[in-house]
Length: 257
Image 1: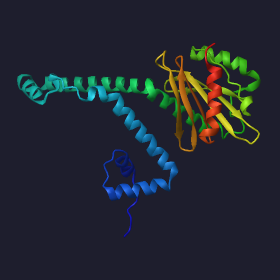
Image 2: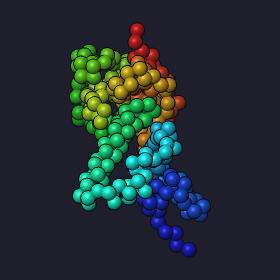
Image 3: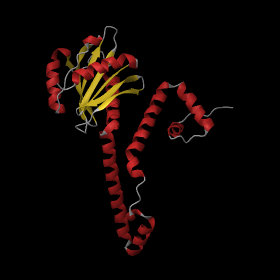
């Protein structure tokens, strides 16, 4: 029997656990043989759980009386047609604004803020580390000036981690734009040509502090954490047990004195 191809709809239905057992098994087999797609699906699953967790507190709230269908129908009987259109438009605008602000909070705060930071670091790694002409904007010899500049732009103290004890040299850094404002990126390499990226930026909750957590986007892996209102992440194409001691060293150096 010819197996029909796995589609994007299948992947989303797989995440939502909406597939029949046979089709779910086919998708699982496909993901086993396509790690790049499996990484994307894992990200979908993480986002789904984060949204469910963030909205759990309001999911069971009763529907406001103003949005009750019978209430709306009765109201329409008592007002001119043009008024109903205006109310509908205002309702859409209000819901849109509320939804936008809710999503703003989801992207800014808590673990989802760290997830965003991890993705930003992975993107920076993918864009800049393959560049062998100008991977950094400011060279390591000017690291003190870069730290001062980054501190001014991020409005938080920024330290340049020294990873020489881990066998990595500072190549330099740059400021990178994110949807949460500027972030400071530092790049390192070793004698074997491996490159690492450290990305740091302020978190929306100034008191946010979270333990170190592993993260992965495609073939880029690493660790992400927050302390004293600053988020940090280390990423590279190395095993987690190799990256974690380096991440611990960065965390030790970044802690306020």
